[in-house]
Image (cartoon, rainbow, N blue to C red; front, side):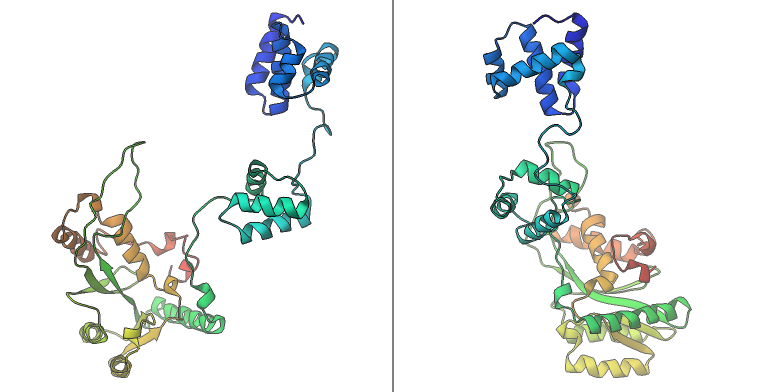
Amino acid sequence: MQITEIEQEMLSQGYKNHRSHSVRCRFKAILLSSQGKQVKDIASIFEVRTRTIYQWMDNWEKDGLLGLLTKPGQGRPPILSLTDSDLVELVKKKTAQHARSLKKICSVLSEELSLPITRHTLRRFLKKLGYTWKRFRKSLKSKQNPEEYAQKLEELKQIIQLYKENYIDLFFADESSFNLEGYVPYGWQPKNEYIHITPAKTKSNNVFGLMSLDNRLEAYDCNGSMTSAVIIAFIDDFASRIEQPAALVIDNAPIHHSKDFELKVKQWKEQDLYIFYLPKYAPHLNPIEILWRKIKYEWLKYENIDSAEELRTQLFEILNSFGKEYRINFKELQEQKVSNIFA
């Protein structure tokens, strides 16, 4: 088959750039024919029948470049279609059941539909549905009591509103520990090069914090275990220094529900410090969790820490500078589903 230089250039560009694989094959087949390749050899390359190659050549002779394009309505209809609502629901159902294995999803769909579903086909279809491959998230939602959660959330909103109107002061309390064992933050690094962090088994720095939404922080450290007696002593000290009625929001850890602690709740109320317990299994409603996360994954420079002493020094520099050098803007925390109640 003879072709002109212009036709050769057009076919070459189409073979390189056309988005359709089948169209690129046709362009290449005509180029190979012009170079003297036999029809049977071309058919072997593209794994089609010889009459298919002859058909491509006839279309080229008749309509030129346009004859090689796939016309509307031609080609194999898609195995998985977005317009088939029952099929879409089936794919979503099987994907939810076997979310960790594309191979397994293909297998059960192929059996259910009596059609061969490849991983490539399924992957493209899932992307069209808006699915992505990403890490699972931990959630305690299944353990929550919906009625208790709704009631507590509404009460928390009312407390925050009283704080915003300057009727009360408001703090969120929690415990956390810091060591050199488990925190590996993300960071921009050259390809195939890594910033190294030296893990070490060190004694944890246990901290009890009371944080306000305007970035005030009262932090207490503990050399031993955080017991109910220790937390009571910390809150006693805090209660002795409040200047107006205040609410203290705290979670349901066992040490916050000991007999001694519950007796102190009544005494603190007489000092105008009111304890509000969050609903169970709802750590996302305690914004001091954001503070701990930022310290561990953003503010502590683990790449520059080699010892427990250096960790402790950096940690307390951050705690002492919170509200000045280190701040949290709750209005910008879009990733928190309920962050708007704190803004």
